[in-house]
Length: 147
Image (cartoon, rainbow, N blue to C red; front, side):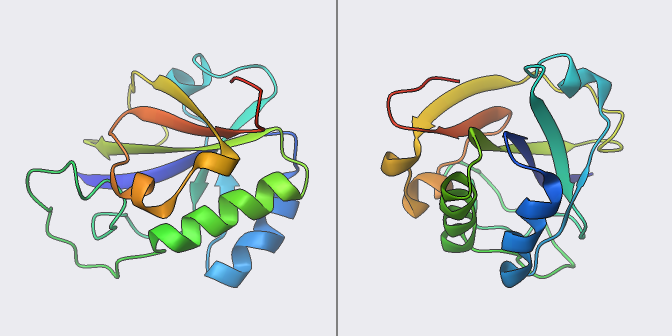
């Protein structure tokens, strides 16, 4: 049982995302979760970081009533995630979003009910990521576009 921050992206190859993410010690692979896949648009891909869990993350920390014990490093900061989102959008992605979920089982097989919250990338801030709600895909979009 752990928190994981997963990514939904459209319009950019995963290899290009990983070129950007390596500077922040992140690497992503496609995650084949049928529950999540049925809630995505046809052009979106669901990605998980090649890492340990995100129980120690500061993302979503303002909304948690208690912090789960983590035996792993905290992982990327809110500033790192924000920079990656901005760089990904600047590189040509149509949209990129973060999904924060407490997994009781495997990331690839757990049923997750996903809400969507579009935010223009120009308005997304690191403090907003500290308020990242669970089970809500916070999707950075180009200004004037919706997801």
